Length: 77
Image 1: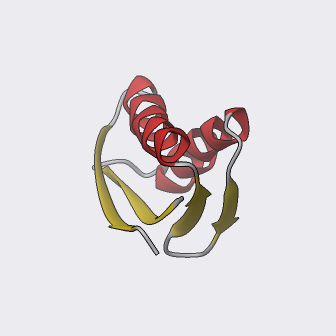
Image 2: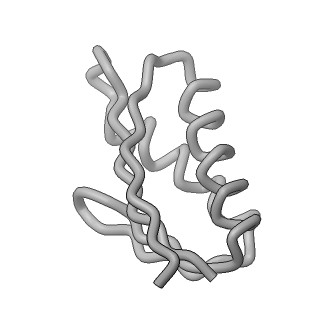
């Protein structure tokens, strides 16, 4: 099991809240515990699921047509 804290930052868009909300829907496809906060989202689950979810989150944000930065902190505790 691993934990991750992730923050997604859409760049140069007035719709950053919408991009983040739409991207976070990708997490529902994974068997993870997650808590969406105002500045970051915390994920907890099996390593493969967490890594896959993080990748999908970033891909989904990119697919919305904006440049995105994603900051992730991973812990094995």
